[in-house]
Image (cartoon, rainbow, N blue to C red; front, side, top):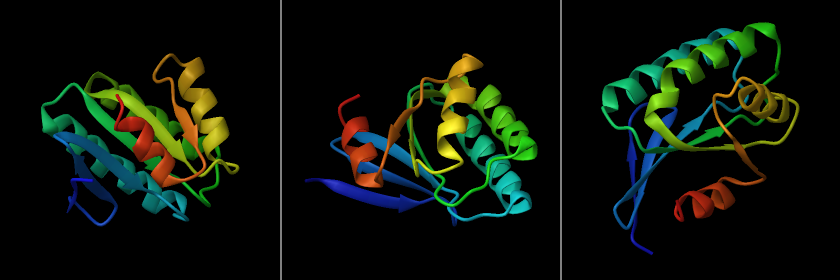
Amino acid sequence: MNLETKSMSDHIRIERHNGREIWIADYSNLAFKELEFKFEIAKKKVINSGRDNLLWIDIATGVKMNRQTGDALRSFANEAKPFIKEYAAVGVSGFVRPFATMLRVAGLFNVKLFDTEQEAIEFLKTC
């Protein structure tokens, strides 16, 4: 299966499969302040990657969506968009569906939603 994992921080890791890199950001069960901080870290890592074809997965199981969360996400999405080719999200609970809709309506990303991380990885391996 030729899968290799590299951790970039405590919440972002890269999985490599046959030369493709899939960046996975896990925001599961974070409170807003920590989530906002993690979005900023992710944004810097994406921008500093210097790439324009990242395959990205957000795992947001148990995250509560509110105005502050939406604003932090929009900030991340606005600045990360030029660097992300495909965007997938896992955790189709209260946070992810409105999150995906908001990004689509804002014209930022066409987020693909998945029930599991493995489903998202399998999809992104084909991009």
